[in-house]
Image (cartoon, rainbow, N blue to C red):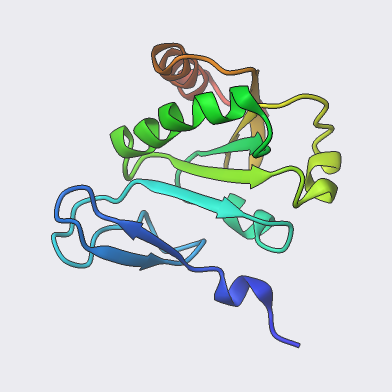
Length: 151
């Protein structure tokens, strides 16, 4: 039986030159465009089999727990896409559909969505519940990432 994470490759389009780039869940450093070498926005979809691999990153990881039937989840999606573009090379955004990965949702005690969980060095450092506008999301993220990490 093959390892499902071995085939977990995302194709990310470079916003600078438009070329598609294949990116593995845990590249060394941060992903860059193979054509123009600019940092790529790192927004990927994870499933139960690939979730833990996606959390392993050299940059902070923001996980979006969502479902397709959730209106607020759909409302916050464009802000997350914009955030991934703005923080290309400095943040990885992982989307997890809780309907398709209920064991992962249960592991994190998810009781309501949308829920954003910020991870640094593989550890959870903060949670934000609900659909928030981009400016509030940026402010929250900046505050969390500049705070001293707890031991």
